[in-house]
Image (cartoon, rainbow, N blue to C red; front, top):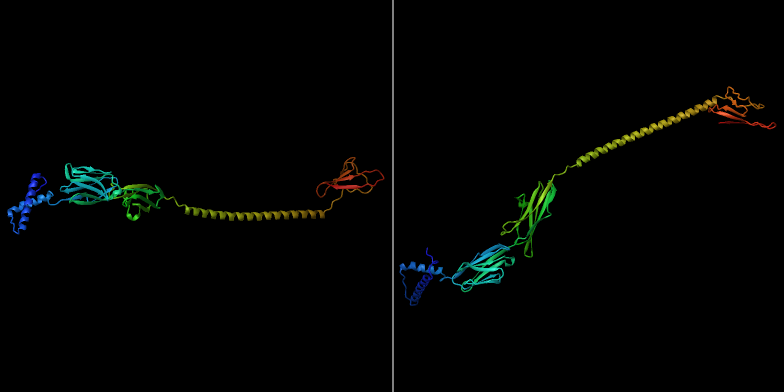
Length: 388
Protein backbone atom coordinates (compact mmCIF):
# COMPACT_ATOMS: atom_id res chain seq x y z
CA UNK A 1 0.00 0.00 0.00
CA UNK A 2 1.16 3.46 -0.81
CA UNK A 3 2.12 5.65 2.14
CA UNK A 4 3.22 9.26 2.21
CA UNK A 5 4.31 9.28 5.86
CA UNK A 6 7.95 8.73 4.92
CA UNK A 7 8.06 11.00 1.87
CA UNK A 8 10.59 13.84 1.70
CA UNK A 9 9.16 17.39 1.95
CA UNK A 10 10.29 18.18 -1.62
CA UNK A 11 8.40 15.13 -2.85
CA UNK A 12 5.26 16.24 -0.97
CA UNK A 13 5.56 19.70 -2.62
CA UNK A 14 5.73 18.09 -6.05
CA UNK A 15 2.53 16.20 -5.29
CA UNK A 16 0.85 19.42 -4.26
CA UNK A 17 1.93 21.14 -7.48
CA UNK A 18 0.65 18.22 -9.59
CA UNK A 19 -2.67 18.26 -7.79
CA UNK A 20 -2.96 22.03 -8.16
CA UNK A 21 -2.13 21.75 -11.92
CA UNK A 22 -4.86 19.14 -12.38
CA UNK A 23 -7.42 21.25 -10.53
CA UNK A 24 -6.42 24.35 -12.44
CA UNK A 25 -6.72 22.59 -15.81
CA UNK A 26 -10.14 21.22 -14.82
CA UNK A 27 -11.29 24.67 -13.74
CA UNK A 28 -10.08 26.34 -17.00
CA UNK A 29 -11.78 23.78 -19.18
CA UNK A 30 -14.98 24.24 -17.24
CA UNK A 31 -14.86 28.00 -17.58
CA UNK A 32 -14.23 27.76 -21.35
CA UNK A 33 -17.03 25.27 -21.63
CA UNK A 34 -14.69 22.82 -23.20
CA UNK A 35 -14.20 19.23 -22.26
CA UNK A 36 -11.05 17.81 -20.76
CA UNK A 37 -10.07 14.25 -21.40
CA UNK A 38 -7.67 12.53 -19.05
CA UNK A 39 -5.99 9.46 -20.46
CA UNK A 40 -6.85 6.28 -18.53
CA UNK A 41 -3.19 5.65 -17.88
CA UNK A 42 -3.08 8.84 -15.80
CA UNK A 43 -5.84 7.74 -13.37
CA UNK A 44 -3.61 5.68 -11.05
CA UNK A 45 -1.20 8.59 -10.71
CA UNK A 46 -4.09 10.94 -10.02
CA UNK A 47 -5.44 8.61 -7.31
CA UNK A 48 -2.01 8.38 -5.68
CA UNK A 49 -1.75 12.15 -5.69
CA UNK A 50 -5.17 12.54 -4.01
CA UNK A 51 -4.44 9.97 -1.31
CA UNK A 52 -1.03 11.46 -0.63
CA UNK A 53 -2.43 14.95 -0.34
CA UNK A 54 -5.16 13.78 2.03
CA UNK A 55 -2.58 12.05 4.22
CA UNK A 56 -0.42 15.18 4.41
CA UNK A 57 -3.35 17.39 5.35
CA UNK A 58 -3.61 19.35 2.14
CA UNK A 59 -7.20 18.32 1.47
CA UNK A 60 -8.47 17.98 5.05
CA UNK A 61 -7.26 19.55 8.30
CA UNK A 62 -8.81 17.76 11.37
CA UNK A 63 -7.72 16.35 14.74
CA UNK A 64 -8.81 13.56 17.11
CA UNK A 65 -9.14 13.71 20.93
CA UNK A 66 -8.66 10.42 22.80
CA UNK A 67 -10.05 8.87 24.89
CA UNK A 68 -13.55 10.20 24.40
CA UNK A 69 -14.43 9.19 27.98
CA UNK A 70 -12.26 8.31 30.96
CA UNK A 71 -13.07 7.19 34.50
CA UNK A 72 -10.41 7.44 37.19
CA UNK A 73 -10.10 7.29 40.95
CA UNK A 74 -9.53 10.48 42.86
CA UNK A 75 -5.84 11.11 43.51
CA UNK A 76 -4.63 9.37 40.36
CA UNK A 77 -3.34 10.84 37.07
CA UNK A 78 -5.24 10.91 33.79
CA UNK A 79 -3.95 11.71 30.28
CA UNK A 80 -5.76 12.81 27.12
CA UNK A 81 -4.07 13.05 23.69
CA UNK A 82 -4.90 15.23 20.69
CA UNK A 83 -3.67 14.11 17.25
CA UNK A 84 -3.67 16.95 14.71
CA UNK A 85 -3.61 16.24 10.97
CA UNK A 86 -2.28 19.43 9.57
CA UNK A 87 -0.29 22.49 10.52
CA UNK A 88 -1.29 24.26 13.72
CA UNK A 89 0.20 26.91 15.95
CA UNK A 90 -1.68 27.19 19.29
CA UNK A 91 -3.61 24.56 21.28
CA UNK A 92 -5.56 25.18 24.49
CA UNK A 93 -7.00 22.78 27.10
CA UNK A 94 -9.99 23.49 29.35
CA UNK A 95 -11.60 21.72 32.34
CA UNK A 96 -15.26 22.51 32.32
CA UNK A 97 -15.48 26.24 31.60
CA UNK A 98 -11.95 27.02 32.83
CA UNK A 99 -8.96 27.16 30.48
CA UNK A 100 -6.04 25.61 32.33
CA UNK A 101 -3.18 25.20 29.80
CA UNK A 102 -1.80 26.51 26.47
CA UNK A 103 0.80 24.87 24.22
CA UNK A 104 2.32 25.96 20.88
CA UNK A 105 3.51 23.91 17.93
CA UNK A 106 7.05 24.67 19.11
CA UNK A 107 6.39 22.88 22.42
CA UNK A 108 6.13 26.00 24.59
CA UNK A 109 3.74 25.37 27.50
CA UNK A 110 1.98 27.74 29.86
CA UNK A 111 1.38 25.46 32.89
CA UNK A 112 -1.24 25.92 35.58
CA UNK A 113 -1.46 24.10 38.94
CA UNK A 114 -1.51 20.33 38.47
CA UNK A 115 -1.71 20.28 34.65
CA UNK A 116 1.01 19.52 32.11
CA UNK A 117 1.33 18.94 28.34
CA UNK A 118 3.93 17.86 25.81
CA UNK A 119 4.48 16.12 22.47
CA UNK A 120 3.75 12.42 22.43
CA UNK A 121 7.08 11.95 20.59
CA UNK A 122 10.00 14.31 20.67
CA UNK A 123 9.91 16.74 17.78
CA UNK A 124 6.52 15.50 16.50
CA UNK A 125 3.91 18.24 16.96
CA UNK A 126 1.12 16.19 15.42
CA UNK A 127 0.35 14.56 18.81
CA UNK A 128 0.01 16.39 22.11
CA UNK A 129 -0.52 14.68 25.50
CA UNK A 130 -2.39 16.57 28.22
CA UNK A 131 -2.10 15.22 31.79
CA UNK A 132 -4.06 16.02 34.95
CA UNK A 133 -2.07 15.13 38.05
CA UNK A 134 -3.72 14.12 41.33
CA UNK A 135 -7.20 14.46 39.87
CA UNK A 136 -9.99 15.52 42.22
CA UNK A 137 -13.77 15.49 42.26
CA UNK A 138 -13.82 19.18 41.29
CA UNK A 139 -12.42 18.19 37.87
CA UNK A 140 -15.23 15.76 37.20
CA UNK A 141 -16.92 16.72 33.91
CA UNK A 142 -15.75 17.76 30.45
CA UNK A 143 -12.21 18.11 29.09
CA UNK A 144 -12.00 20.31 25.95
CA UNK A 145 -9.12 20.66 23.49
CA UNK A 146 -9.19 23.61 21.08
CA UNK A 147 -6.79 24.04 18.13
CA UNK A 148 -6.76 27.53 16.63
CA UNK A 149 -7.52 27.76 12.94
CA UNK A 150 -9.85 25.56 10.94
CA UNK A 151 -9.53 22.61 13.39
CA UNK A 152 -12.08 23.70 15.96
CA UNK A 153 -12.45 21.89 19.33
CA UNK A 154 -13.11 18.42 20.69
CA UNK A 155 -14.55 17.43 24.08
CA UNK A 156 -14.03 14.31 26.20
CA UNK A 157 -15.76 13.25 29.43
CA UNK A 158 -13.91 12.76 32.71
CA UNK A 159 -15.51 10.83 35.59
CA UNK A 160 -13.79 10.95 38.96
CA UNK A 161 -14.65 8.32 41.55
CA UNK A 162 -13.94 8.58 45.26
CA UNK A 163 -13.58 5.83 47.85
CA UNK A 164 -14.88 6.64 51.32
CA UNK A 165 -14.87 4.65 54.56
CA UNK A 166 -16.46 1.36 55.59
CA UNK A 167 -17.07 -0.21 59.00
CA UNK A 168 -19.16 -2.89 60.71
CA UNK A 169 -20.83 -1.41 63.76
CA UNK A 170 -20.83 -3.24 67.07
CA UNK A 171 -17.53 -5.10 66.64
CA UNK A 172 -17.06 -8.76 67.57
CA UNK A 173 -20.07 -10.69 68.85
CA UNK A 174 -20.62 -13.72 71.10
CA UNK A 175 -23.93 -15.59 70.86
CA UNK A 176 -25.43 -18.99 71.58
CA UNK A 177 -25.75 -21.60 68.87
CA UNK A 178 -28.95 -21.28 66.87
CA UNK A 179 -29.45 -17.62 67.77
CA UNK A 180 -30.38 -15.15 65.04
CA UNK A 181 -27.62 -12.55 64.58
CA UNK A 182 -27.57 -9.23 62.75
CA UNK A 183 -24.58 -7.25 61.47
CA UNK A 184 -24.74 -3.69 60.14
CA UNK A 185 -22.19 -2.31 57.66
CA UNK A 186 -21.96 1.45 57.07
CA UNK A 187 -20.19 3.18 54.14
CA UNK A 188 -19.61 6.94 54.22
CA UNK A 189 -18.31 9.52 51.72
CA UNK A 190 -18.31 7.46 48.50
CA UNK A 191 -18.87 8.60 44.90
CA UNK A 192 -20.64 7.11 43.14
CA UNK A 193 -22.70 4.74 45.30
CA UNK A 194 -20.48 1.71 46.02
CA UNK A 195 -21.40 -1.90 45.49
CA UNK A 196 -21.69 -3.54 48.94
CA UNK A 197 -21.31 -7.29 49.51
CA UNK A 198 -20.69 -9.71 52.41
CA UNK A 199 -18.56 -12.81 52.96
CA UNK A 200 -18.50 -15.44 55.71
CA UNK A 201 -15.19 -17.22 56.17
CA UNK A 202 -14.19 -15.93 52.72
CA UNK A 203 -17.28 -17.25 50.94
CA UNK A 204 -19.72 -14.84 49.30
CA UNK A 205 -23.06 -14.45 51.06
CA UNK A 206 -26.28 -14.80 49.09
CA UNK A 207 -27.76 -11.36 48.43
CA UNK A 208 -31.10 -12.54 49.83
CA UNK A 209 -29.55 -12.56 53.33
CA UNK A 210 -28.74 -8.83 53.39
CA UNK A 211 -30.44 -5.58 52.51
CA UNK A 212 -28.65 -2.38 51.40
CA UNK A 213 -30.01 1.17 51.32
CA UNK A 214 -28.24 4.34 50.11
CA UNK A 215 -28.65 8.08 50.57
CA UNK A 216 -26.91 11.06 48.97
CA UNK A 217 -25.70 14.00 51.00
CA UNK A 218 -23.44 16.83 49.88
CA UNK A 219 -22.53 15.09 46.63
CA UNK A 220 -21.48 11.92 48.45
CA UNK A 221 -23.22 8.59 48.82
CA UNK A 222 -23.73 6.88 52.19
CA UNK A 223 -24.95 3.29 52.42
CA UNK A 224 -26.18 0.95 55.14
CA UNK A 225 -26.24 -2.81 54.65
CA UNK A 226 -27.78 -5.23 57.18
CA UNK A 227 -26.86 -8.93 57.18
CA UNK A 228 -29.00 -11.45 59.11
CA UNK A 229 -28.38 -15.17 59.57
CA UNK A 230 -28.52 -17.97 62.15
CA UNK A 231 -25.38 -18.59 64.19
CA UNK A 232 -24.02 -22.12 63.76
CA UNK A 233 -20.26 -21.96 64.32
CA UNK A 234 -17.44 -19.46 64.84
CA UNK A 235 -17.34 -17.27 61.74
CA UNK A 236 -15.36 -14.35 60.31
CA UNK A 237 -17.86 -11.88 58.86
CA UNK A 238 -16.58 -9.36 56.31
CA UNK A 239 -18.28 -6.44 54.56
CA UNK A 240 -16.84 -5.16 51.26
CA UNK A 241 -17.46 -1.96 49.26
CA UNK A 242 -16.05 -1.04 45.86
CA UNK A 243 -16.39 1.19 42.81
CA UNK A 244 -15.30 0.31 39.26
CA UNK A 245 -11.86 1.99 39.40
CA UNK A 246 -10.88 0.76 42.87
CA UNK A 247 -8.15 -1.91 42.46
CA UNK A 248 -9.24 -3.84 45.55
CA UNK A 249 -12.51 -3.52 47.50
CA UNK A 250 -12.31 -1.83 50.86
CA UNK A 251 -13.43 -4.08 53.69
CA UNK A 252 -14.23 -4.31 57.37
CA UNK A 253 -14.43 -7.57 59.31
CA UNK A 254 -15.54 -8.85 62.72
CA UNK A 255 -15.48 -12.24 64.45
CA UNK A 256 -18.57 -14.15 65.55
CA UNK A 257 -18.08 -16.50 68.51
CA UNK A 258 -20.75 -19.19 68.93
CA UNK A 259 -21.06 -20.91 72.33
CA UNK A 260 -23.05 -24.10 73.03
CA UNK A 261 -26.57 -23.81 74.40
CA UNK A 262 -26.51 -24.45 78.18
CA UNK A 263 -28.59 -27.40 79.50
CA UNK A 264 -32.24 -26.63 80.10
CA UNK A 265 -32.75 -27.20 83.82
CA UNK A 266 -36.37 -26.06 83.75
CA UNK A 267 -37.88 -29.55 83.56
CA UNK A 268 -35.48 -30.96 86.14
CA UNK A 269 -36.14 -28.09 88.51
CA UNK A 270 -39.88 -28.56 88.08
CA UNK A 271 -39.60 -32.28 88.84
CA UNK A 272 -37.39 -31.67 91.89
CA UNK A 273 -39.72 -28.99 93.22
CA UNK A 274 -42.73 -31.23 92.68
CA UNK A 275 -41.10 -34.18 94.46
CA UNK A 276 -39.84 -31.95 97.25
CA UNK A 277 -43.27 -30.41 97.74
CA UNK A 278 -44.91 -33.80 97.84
CA UNK A 279 -42.34 -35.05 100.37
CA UNK A 280 -42.89 -32.00 102.57
CA UNK A 281 -46.63 -32.55 102.41
CA UNK A 282 -46.24 -36.20 103.44
CA UNK A 283 -43.92 -35.22 106.32
CA UNK A 284 -46.40 -32.58 107.43
CA UNK A 285 -49.24 -35.08 107.46
CA UNK A 286 -47.13 -37.60 109.39
CA UNK A 287 -46.15 -34.90 111.89
CA UNK A 288 -49.76 -33.89 112.41
CA UNK A 289 -50.79 -37.51 112.99
CA UNK A 290 -47.90 -38.08 115.40
CA UNK A 291 -48.67 -34.95 117.39
CA UNK A 292 -52.34 -35.84 117.56
CA UNK A 293 -51.62 -39.34 118.83
CA UNK A 294 -49.05 -38.14 121.34
CA UNK A 295 -51.41 -35.55 122.69
CA UNK A 296 -54.22 -38.09 122.94
CA UNK A 297 -51.98 -40.54 124.80
CA UNK A 298 -50.85 -37.81 127.16
CA UNK A 299 -54.42 -36.82 127.93
CA UNK A 300 -55.27 -40.48 128.60
CA UNK A 301 -52.31 -40.85 130.98
CA UNK A 302 -53.27 -37.67 132.81
CA UNK A 303 -56.85 -38.81 133.18
CA UNK A 304 -55.69 -42.22 134.39
CA UNK A 305 -53.36 -40.61 136.91
CA UNK A 306 -56.08 -38.31 138.18
CA UNK A 307 -58.46 -41.20 138.41
CA UNK A 308 -55.86 -43.22 140.29
CA UNK A 309 -55.21 -40.40 142.72
CA UNK A 310 -58.90 -39.86 143.27
CA UNK A 311 -59.38 -43.56 143.94
CA UNK A 312 -56.43 -43.63 146.35
CA UNK A 313 -57.72 -40.64 148.27
CA UNK A 314 -61.17 -42.13 148.40
CA UNK A 315 -59.81 -45.41 149.70
CA UNK A 316 -57.80 -43.59 152.37
CA UNK A 317 -60.86 -41.60 153.40
CA UNK A 318 -63.00 -44.74 153.67
CA UNK A 319 -60.31 -46.57 155.65
CA UNK A 320 -60.12 -43.71 158.17
CA UNK A 321 -63.89 -43.80 158.65
CA UNK A 322 -64.04 -47.57 159.20
CA UNK A 323 -61.25 -47.90 161.77
CA UNK A 324 -61.01 -45.81 164.96
CA UNK A 325 -57.88 -45.25 167.02
CA UNK A 326 -57.40 -45.12 170.78
CA UNK A 327 -56.46 -41.69 171.94
CA UNK A 328 -53.39 -42.59 173.90
CA UNK A 329 -52.81 -39.03 174.84
CA UNK A 330 -55.90 -38.77 176.86
CA UNK A 331 -55.31 -38.34 180.61
CA UNK A 332 -58.21 -38.65 182.97
CA UNK A 333 -59.09 -35.87 185.30
CA UNK A 334 -57.20 -36.03 188.58
CA UNK A 335 -54.07 -37.63 187.11
CA UNK A 336 -51.38 -35.09 187.01
CA UNK A 337 -48.52 -37.04 185.62
CA UNK A 338 -47.42 -40.21 184.07
CA UNK A 339 -44.58 -42.34 185.23
CA UNK A 340 -41.26 -41.21 183.77
CA UNK A 341 -40.08 -43.00 180.71
CA UNK A 342 -43.27 -44.99 180.57
CA UNK A 343 -43.94 -46.45 177.22
CA UNK A 344 -47.14 -48.22 176.60
CA UNK A 345 -48.19 -50.48 173.77
CA UNK A 346 -49.84 -47.58 172.00
CA UNK A 347 -46.52 -45.78 171.67
CA UNK A 348 -47.15 -43.10 174.21
CA UNK A 349 -44.02 -41.97 176.03
CA UNK A 350 -42.98 -39.31 178.44
CA UNK A 351 -39.50 -38.16 179.15
CA UNK A 352 -38.27 -38.33 182.71
CA UNK A 353 -38.94 -35.17 184.62
CA UNK A 354 -40.73 -33.63 181.60
CA UNK A 355 -44.26 -32.51 181.26
CA UNK A 356 -44.28 -33.15 177.49
CA UNK A 357 -46.09 -36.24 176.28
CA UNK A 358 -45.52 -37.69 172.81
CA UNK A 359 -48.25 -39.62 171.00
CA UNK A 360 -48.15 -41.31 167.65
CA UNK A 361 -50.10 -39.86 164.74
CA UNK A 362 -52.34 -42.64 163.69
CA UNK A 363 -53.19 -40.97 160.39
CA UNK A 364 -49.94 -39.58 159.09
CA UNK A 365 -47.46 -41.69 160.95
CA UNK A 366 -46.29 -38.72 163.01
CA UNK A 367 -46.13 -38.46 166.75
CA UNK A 368 -48.26 -36.07 168.75
CA UNK A 369 -46.58 -33.92 171.33
CA UNK A 370 -48.46 -33.33 174.51
CA UNK A 371 -47.60 -30.42 176.75
CA UNK A 372 -48.24 -30.81 180.45
CA UNK A 373 -48.26 -27.48 182.08
CA UNK A 374 -47.49 -27.93 185.77
CA UNK A 375 -48.69 -25.08 187.77
CA UNK A 376 -48.74 -24.30 191.33
CA UNK A 377 -51.38 -25.93 193.49
CA UNK A 378 -54.57 -24.08 193.55
CA UNK A 379 -54.53 -23.29 189.80
CA UNK A 380 -56.55 -25.09 187.23
CA UNK A 381 -54.51 -27.20 184.83
CA UNK A 382 -54.95 -27.18 181.08
CA UNK A 383 -53.72 -29.81 178.64
CA UNK A 384 -52.81 -29.05 175.04
CA UNK A 385 -52.24 -31.61 172.39
CA UNK A 386 -50.45 -30.54 169.19
CA UNK A 387 -50.17 -32.93 166.30
CA UNK A 388 -47.06 -32.34 164.21
